[in-house]
Image (cartoon, rainbow, N blue to C red; front, side):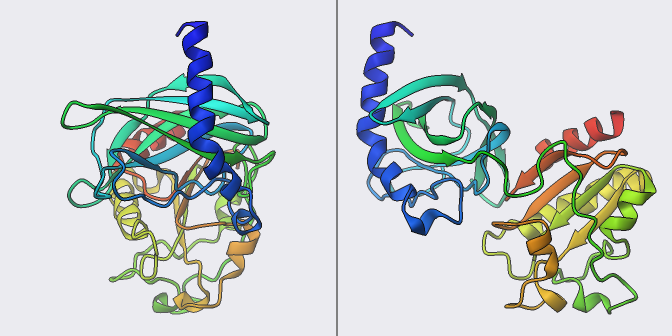
Length: 294
């Protein structure tokens, strides 16, 4: 990209993004580190950002692409350009592509990019995508990057939670999945003490507003069938006695701003990967193989 093109791109980004940015910085957005963009009917390309915990360092950046009727756009070739916004200027900080993963029936899916943010503050992403009709469209969205992650950070040790397990409570009081899953017989504290890798899912399949908890759990159970006891497998509901509205202590212990979350813990008790929201087997399984190979 030439210097002139880069300057033009910055100006056009600011024109389209600062209004969204202002909304993202209002008190109503304090509970999330990124702007949750509402779809806008009529736009040929709308970008929605579901991340609630973007922070300085490495991030799993998730987005959805929607067409003029708010239908998901699958498998669109794309380029993401990330800008750090200071006042009335936007500085290009990185460029990458996002991979599409199908996470539900039909064309329901997400785009995922691995990116690093070097500074806290106001950021923006410009998405250039080729639509199924061959047209190339651009959309820009602003978001906020925090100095530190709300949830336990990569490289840190997770809270040594001692959540209720079987037989302390009946399985129906520990799990909203139907049938209940068998991942409720080990506390996080005991898993950390065991000195082997672990997968921990926090989410409520029976009440999950994003409808991704159930599919995530299915992927985890399939991975468990394949990998067996090489890992410790834990599922923790976010509601006490698996029933809203009272949140379980684990929500505050892990400082969860959303659900579901999946954390991968190495044998040394450090978090090496975390996934917010939906995750496809094509993304989860390679991460588990890397965990076991480390």
